[in-house]
Amino acid sequence: MLKMKIIAKELASMPNSLPLNASNSIFVCLDEGRCDIVKVLISGPDGTPYQNGLFEFDVFFPTSYPFSPPKCAFLTTGEGNLRFNPNLYNDGKICLSILGTWEGRPEEKWNAHCSLLQVLISIQVRTKTLITFSSNSHLIKRISKKNE
Image 1: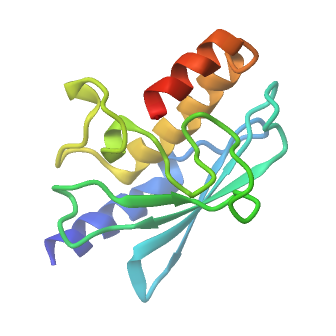
Image 2: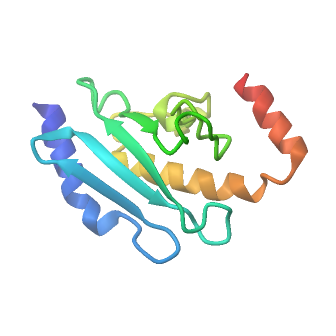
């Protein structure tokens, strides 16, 4: 039951912590009967190709949470045909150190003190920063080679 207490505490603090403004927001929806499953919408940041877009994610908290990261899937993939970002795959994979799906530095990896809020902010920030460089073909090639 430690998992459920921690999840409930995290979700209760989110209304005051999530970014909510015209240019970028994160929305979290949960089923009160199953707080270990969460639906997330992240709006695309202004000044990027994602502006005015909503990007859907499913989050599942495994039984080992908070000692292991939540399982996250990117759902806005056009039925597996679209890849919007080097970190968001068309098969739903989200490539982030905090999720254990990317190498990263030790301080970027998941530990029991991390939270869902940190994961969501990491997704949002990663999207903003990589978009700026997406027109640089040499960077895209370098990122692609790392993902192979």
